[in-house]
Length: 179
Image (cartoon, rainbow, N blue to C red; front, side, top):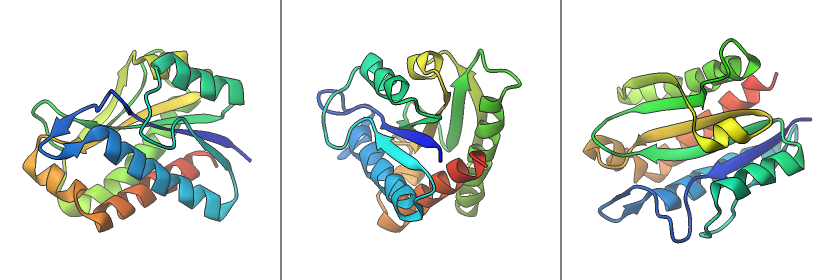
């Protein structure tokens, strides 16, 4: 059994990206809850969320939750903004040719296999020094699930069926990466 931490980005006083009535902090929490439900149903792995409601947690607190629990995988959920379109994933730039990169490839492919039916661009598997990726003691990935300031992306993110299927693709990718 693996221990998975789902980290819905932002929360509380930190809304993340905001576009019209759409707030990143609300979408990340919604998606994390749906992904968590899949793990609770299959009972193969244990899952913990860094936040279960609209509260603020510092990056240090998010990392501490995962490290103290002894998690095997940390999945941080986000949405992009700033003039792009599509999906991208990140791992810590110090993780070249490691298990973390292998997991990224599996998760990324799972999500893109769903998103391709909507003709959404694959912005790639990237690396960065994001705090939560750098400071967790386990494999960690940060998912940027579409852009809140792109009309096509935000229209899809406003549909419950799309959110449900996106959550399923995230769950399936994480599940596959743990085998």
